[in-house]
Image (cartoon, rainbow, N blue to C red):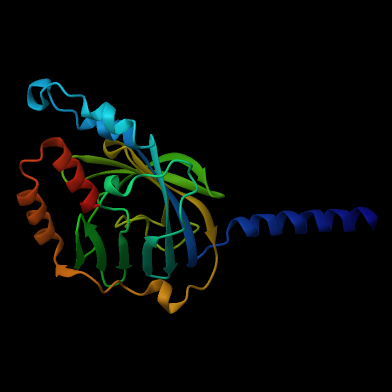
Length: 256
């Protein structure tokens, strides 16, 4: 009888453990840590000596900024709706000067996955745009590679966006909402890790909370000059056509 009881409770514990691994989350809050390798980004912008008179302005800027810019964003989700917006302040010792903040520092992106619509509030230098458009169409290639992120087993996927920018994502199907940071989505679960090597930028979830978001946590942004995404792209191309590598780099950041 004693052996039977021990065996019964052993099987019960194993069953509960397996059941716990199959829990699926459909609403909550994710904190993302965004990291940009500033030095590598600066090296990408180098001009030829005959263009800048031989002055090494890259080295001068490196003396004034940290190698890494670390910021935090929150992603609230509930079913088919997500809202990505700035989170807590970074605790890094050396702060990025205001004059060198990238244009995606305060992005707010609302997505309605069911209706295929998004509303993005984007700061483009001294202007703020409100982009109301359909969701970005991304053709993902899913591999068998996996990685653990914030306690979730994630699967790797890759894609090309904006014609030539390579993207690596890690998603988990344990979170049923198919969203992600910025405007990335359309995978069989939530994106918890993202890397854009060409921009030397990564987003990785630091924690996932299974909470019921308040209505204000999923409210679409309303401020900014209204435009479609294609209108913004054309405006950026026209404004930055003579900015060289810096202009192309800034445009990709804004379009994310």
